[in-house]
Length: 294
Length: 162
Image 1 (tube, each protein chain N blue to C red):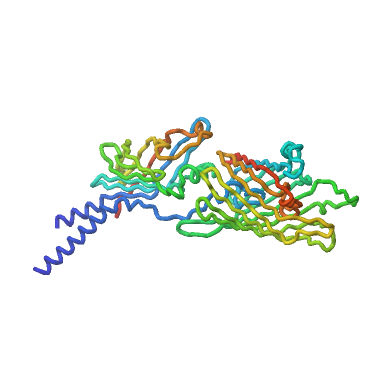
Image 2 (image 1 turned 120 degrees about the vertical axis):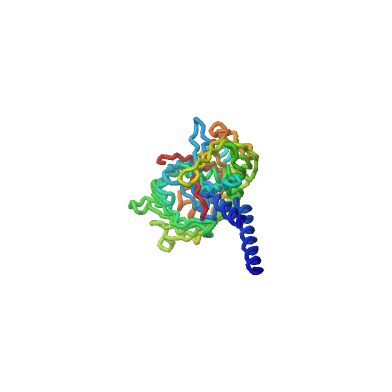
């Protein structure tokens, strides 16, 4: 009898404990288990400044980007009306086929280059239940030089082509700081001399730091494997510092850099401007997105 | 023994879902701003009247990917404040308690219905949420495009816990 009583009270108290526990835990029942989330907005724009970011427009989004690079401080700056008179311009139209695939075309005034590009987000950084530490975006562009050659030689169409292929590794460290490292290769079908490399290798490093929800500082640097060619041309590593400003469907990017070309191989591999000579250019990129397919 | 039966019955008065539909409409004539989450959770204890609803900010789906990014990045700040929730009681056709959005908690009392159907409970609520009251700043440039009060709708079918 004694044993039965003890057993009964043990069972009872256990039940009570469970009941009390259940009561306190009612709201914890609704706690949503951690899910895996794609990291968003590693960078604001599809470019940091000149360099491609890992971002692509979403599916069904048409993006128009207009960019200017004004004349440098060392080139009759006031006579050229703060460089406006000799501004270089680029227009770009691109489309998000899927959330990962982006295709586009562009036209840049420097050397009258027309280009087409394809960009694909192969890996995306995730957080939550299953974490993946970085994103990987592949990018490839084909560029056609429209400017006339002045060397008196009849050039094939293929001479005018150049290519840029890139693997962009990006990581958003926290809500304000993101970094990317992008090894890339530039290939020219035509180089000045037989001993000059047709393919050069490059490494781009870029970052952004958000100051407020809509304002961020950006910076990038691009190192190249060969900057000297047999015809005496000497090139410099391009870098840029900028500010990203976002309002609704627009991203405004204002920056200063030592390059005024905007089509890929030209700014990446053959930038003739030495910043130490005062060859620094102010510029902007403005993007506008249109959702054309819901 | 009577106590034992009582605790068991209290246990079975709890209803739960993790597939509640929670939407909000903060649109204006200038811009269509509508998002819906199909994975909100809701709990209700019929014995005590306690009611809770929770939603992950990143689970809201917008028509436009960019709008969704802006919502999480610039307005809700979902990395800092991942969840919105209501905890309180259902009493006399009202949900009375605390609403937490964007890390800020306010007392609210809003009309709410709980109906019984086939052993499940159906929860329906619709109420306005003043966006700025929860510390979500709307910049002047887009002030005309975003409603001052977002219209929130909750629809959930809660199943009895086994």
